[in-house]
Image 1 (cartoon, rainbow, N blue to C red):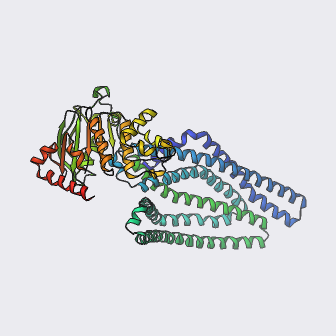
Image 2 (spheres, one colour; image 1 turned 90 degrees about the vertical axis):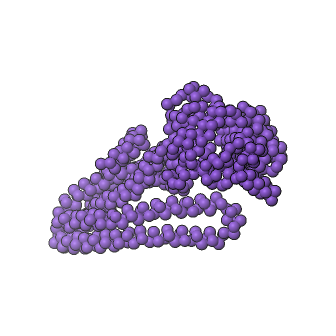
Image 3 (cartoon, rainbow, N blue to C red; image 1 turned 30 degrees about the vertical axis):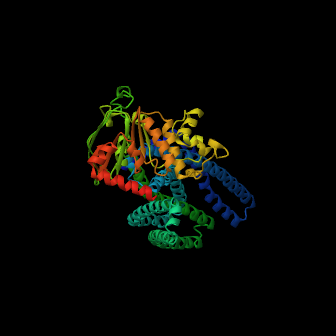
Length: 581
């Protein structure tokens, strides 16, 4: 019952708005099937008239046969075109819903899936579901007509033979039921393998240079061979099941066919049946068996589509970012001037805590740096502030209000998050910068480029800021990408700025320039700066020292050198690394 409701929900959501086209498709299918059902009768009658040498009737039946064949061909073309239109539009509607769901997922929900798995669900599973529904819509009528019409004709021709021929159907149904579990198991393995294969390819195609750096070509090739071998084993197991079913079906069909032709031979010898009757009977029985095969095929496809529905249903049921209306944007007092963490702890997917009992209170503008060893929770802390994750315990307050009650659009508007990774589209420099603010003027862009040190870099390109960067910004160095990241932050007007290691690839001069601009921002804004560089730390108004997910100490650079032995060692190590570099 639950599955039936799910199937109905899919139909109502995606197919109902195309109901008139669906009805037209059903009409075309029905007319085509009715017309094509007459052909075996015409052909059988034509053979009998050949035996009688009735030339006039032979010409009439040939003309009727050809006309019907032509009409059914035209109807089949129309059906194919209409099916294509419906399939594309409905599939596109489903993919848009799934893609929108993906974009609205909470980050913790997104973390459960790898990219290839999501791609398979949004593309392949959605196509399979739409194809299944259209097959059901068109095939159900075809099956009904191709069962009723042939039954009428074969019973009329020979009731005795009909009883023998129909023995095939329950035997094939029993066979299908016996193998259903194996088919379902094999299909589940095939889907998982498809996800794993895509994941392997995505990983290695995206890390082309790293494979060369570590001289991994041979090892990667061997790993790929192993992945393909796993796929072969799965396909071999599936083929084994299919072969067993095919052999048993063929055996049943051969026995039934032998009995049928034996009975026909006796009837024809006794002049109780004509050869034309036998030809018509064989054609109609073939249609009947074809209809039964369609039922079996739909049954198997139901298993496949059931897995697809389960995979898509799982994705659609994941937690999405909530549009909170508990507190209006007006009530937040817009500009953020206070941020407080109160005994806050956090873990990824209920594993070990990344952040433990974090507490701090920021009530004035300034530059707040966060420093610590890799994996101590620096980036995670600021991702929580940006609303990407929710704490397991404790509270996070913005302007004295619980962050979980604030509208997410307010948080994303007022907090400017600049991650260490940069997102670059295959477009011009100008359009890449305008991703941060589509209303930015040419003057705004020029100022942002000037402040980030990009202007002198881009002036070297022939087309200046109208230069196409290519996929992933292939024309830019890692330092230029970080400058672009900073320029984007400047194009957005917020009250809190988060910079996550945005100077790690810059030379000393460029780093000092950007740190100076960040200090200027910090005069009238709260600015968080995650860094492993010493220069920003010396100019920070306050530094939070993280160790093992806890704030060990806080204070400015001079204060921490005096009271925190850990910070002193860490700072010394960072400076040593810079000098070695």
